[in-house]
Image (cartoon, rainbow, N blue to C red; front, top):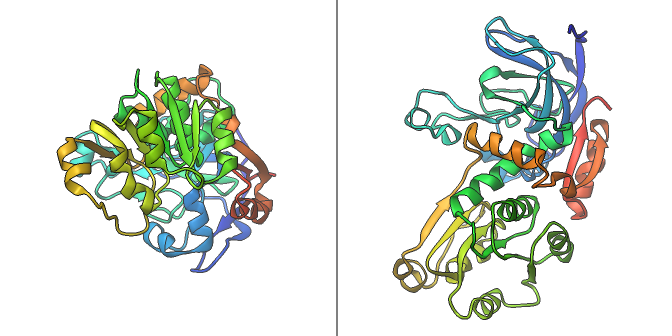
Length: 355
């Protein structure tokens, strides 16, 4: 079915270093070679987008000006370049880790950690992002939906994929699992862990609102680490053994440093949060070496293995991503959306470019 595409579109653009974005008219790009033009249906705002908005030290590492932000998105194919074999009207998600296909990692099924990776929505090898009415993506980075999900659910598959990648590496079936940090990815990790058969799910955070939401989405026990020493709780809960499965999602250096002491001997920890300071482990021998631990880290999703799994979890009702969407805004009200995030009152916020 033919779709009429306008010449210009509304977009958020970061044209120079500094805070916020410009909301302006820009040309609608023309797809070439294997590129696909997508009508963007929804964008979920990520924690990294906050850094891009503020243009802090993290943004200077992960992004390159100029660019259109937004990478957690749902789109509909409206036009294809001559080498793109994908039907107009197809619903897609965007794998924002732009792999090269030629490096060691790509050739060994680790495309998500490509040595030469670009990043959609960050100005890394593409100026395009999802905070625009239309966007351009190479067909090889698109996940074509096979199940009937709405735009909000499709946009949430990207962050859900990070959580799934982490939990899959933990192997939680039949195990008690501790999630440190109950922000969006931590909550999603807990939801995936429950869906994958975790025995008891414990969430730790300093924000009572996050902990309350954790209870609503299936966590069995929550711990406010401002009110209770986490190690003391863990040792009491596990009769002195520590947890066999720990998922560190806070990125707070003090929590990451302490996480090793919360693991039992032979336990597994996966690091998802992003510490901004050097890490220091006080008792390296007792808490790491002599425990014979397994430490894993994740960056993104396994392409496209994770997408298939998360799509199924959402479509089958095993993970309700809508439970984490606290606010919805037209993209024109992006300043209001970011103020909600800065206030700490939002969880996941979804923007709609055509509104």
